[in-house]
Length: 292
Image (tube, rainbow, N blue to C red):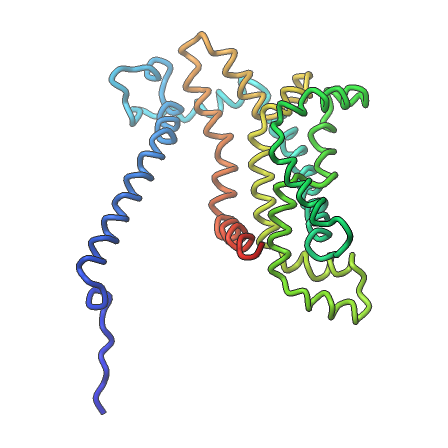
């Protein structure tokens, strides 16, 4: 019996297809290299000495590298305290946004009640309102509640819906889950809350992971919120701490290497989380657009 030979990759592809793919890869690599230049420059400056930070022509590879800049920059201000404050805000905000946004999205996607589509449209319309419009009324409200200079204005709103974007993202994912699963659960005596808790949430792990990543990134990089509501130095977040550190060295060339060192350290958590969770992040974003 004659053996059928499987054609190789190069035999299946024409010269035009191979040339197009190679060209595309080269363009992607060039684009990635261009986008990575600021990152490399930040790391290079973080490892330079005081006199090398503004050297002309610039030296990309410091000789020798000053690794002590990371410790010196981190200990110039109490960044350990700022990190603890930021993690506290992130943890409580993350819990509130995941729970409240998923609960509201469950109502919009799995329950049928009069005015549901109208309420969903109104909710989506709030995404068109700029933050600057609601900034002053919100501040006045929190001032009457005596929440200024506390973490409450940064945490409590997360427990009231979690944000229109997260509700929309989770609703789109919940719509991809067959409604027959809800009917089968109701026949077995499950209430709506049990369906949400035992069926929808376990199946929505990719979308919930996407919400968690977005929430972490936004809270970690949030500057405007803490700037408005936080007054005490011991309650600053890492974003406020970095801005204060930059303000102290704005008129001195001897501190920019330390600023870059601290900025590099504060960027690492975002890079690490996205590196290990990028598959779940991409899966959640793609699946949420399957059904509208």
